[in-house]
Image (tube, rainbow, N blue to C red):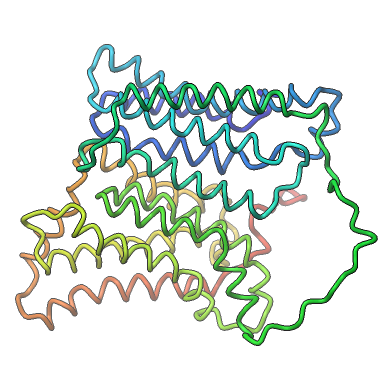
Length: 403
């Protein structure tokens, strides 16, 4: 069961990545590459599929295989980084161990939620998304380089270790013999009451787009606040994937594509601006003038629209004849470069670049604003036009004729 688990298949690749970059002082920026896959790509929020529930195995065996594969994806790369630091010292190893311990507790909490039934309830989605934000954003709170008075590492590791053992034992004792696929309560005798129409005609659109996926802009703003701009942009493709899945039905309604695009990107735009503004107050630098702050926010918006454009490649009708894996290359490369770039720089490299560019731009505020507005408006226009040319029918569809 572990061999067919996607989490276990990812272990060699992530272990190699952390072994190669584990000696870097900024290897903490790689931690979201462990937290996000263990939560999202490996379906941590799903107890089992219908196929797995029908296998002649005990519920504990299935639960244990899922827990072990996810903990292996988390801890084997961390241990690979630790092994490298025995030869090449790394200053952030202890904080990485603390972050992995905190995230282990979060993963075990997820495994304990609603163990009886296979379907996932709305409350569990909210809790799961909140734990993801907490796990990824624990790194700045645990590292003293961001100005926080972090608790002693020994206390964090001890508390998380005890909590992990207790949660594992609790989950092991609570796992049923088999998992239920059907709901636990019968609904045939319940009275069905039709909900009245909402007075707000945009209510279905807003409730679809602005759901639990809006925790991603909050996580993005949090990371940008502490200078982890490159790492924060990891959430852009995740947000677009979630929003596109939830709001796919909106493409069939008579709604202008440009209006739908603006509604879709509004939370992420707010997260980018909020993170950039708060960043100037949380960790102020003496060289961050008002012009430099404006330049940095404009650069963040331009980068966001470029990533949004890349995220639209899989559904762009102009690339209908291009294999799906090729369409994903620009998005993966763009996010990967931004995520790995801080490894070779310090957290405030974007601030210094903004100040350098602000000094090069014209002193006149009208020309200064025009120079910044052009790339922002240009990348926005490209992303919006591409969004209007979406074609959902060819997403991840394999041809049966081999053509």
